[in-house]
Amino acid sequence: MYKISNWVEYCVTSIPNKRGFALDLACGLGRHSIYLSYLGFKVLSVDINKDHLNSFSGTNIKKLLKDIENKENWPLTKIKFDIIVVTNFLNRSIFPLILNSLALGGFLIYETFSEGQQKIGKPKNPNFILQPKELLSLCSTTSLIAYEEICAINPSNHSFKQRIFSCNVR
Image (cartoon, rainbow, N blue to C red; front, top):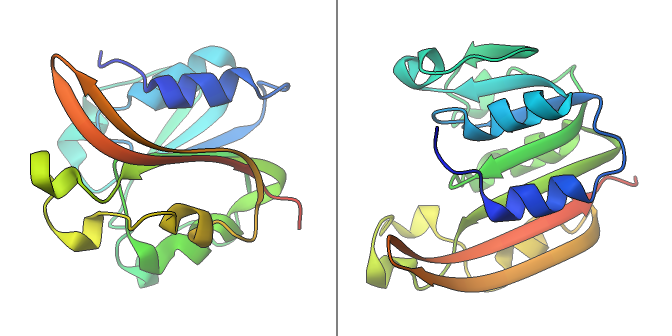
């Protein structure tokens, strides 16, 4: 299994109630879905890649094969989540839909690529790279708990990222 994001782990450990309904959006190979399930959450894992969804399983994990980049495909209009986790994925046009899927008191944990990433690796497409402080702006209707803009340098991976941990209080 792939390593859980240290940001996701940090944020989740700050959440007092480890029960409820979680969304792992653009879940990839399911590392965060498995982690959240292990902690006691009921998890909906959503991804466009069938092979990715078939590569993992876990207690209390339901999977949904869906192209969420198309707003018309948004499958979650009537469901509210206690926690939404998104890593290494950005589609600005569905951001309001993501935030509207948060339950009152629900938590958003979001981590994705930021300005500077295109100079050191993928993605290079500006549509998938946040501008400085853009994640703060996209999440302005939520209550900020923690935010970072970082350049992570380690032997196997270098990346520029923005990370936010916020709560829906509206």
